[in-house]
Length: 127
Image (cartoon, rainbow, N blue to C red):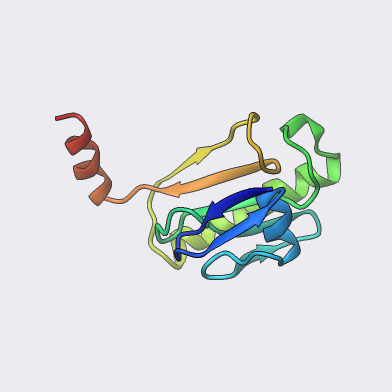
């Protein structure tokens, strides 16, 4: 079991955070953004940045090449639908995508919006 502190200050103890979120045991602030047969999308539970979405596999796999053909198709369609909503609803012009295979969670991708305030944050780090 791992103890994880969520962006709302609450802590949860779980074996796998992705399993807890995709099954509804732990809820991401803002709730479910999109759910398909194979994927679950939610606001990042650790970082409360508006529009920062995690698209996670419901199945406990870690790598993109472990997805079935149906899961790959579902992933791209879900990713596209979320990106369109980020642009149309939230006015997010650019998004950074992050994916790593050495995660302790399920296969997932972060969809991180780029906001102007991030430039100032980065400039402070470089001082």
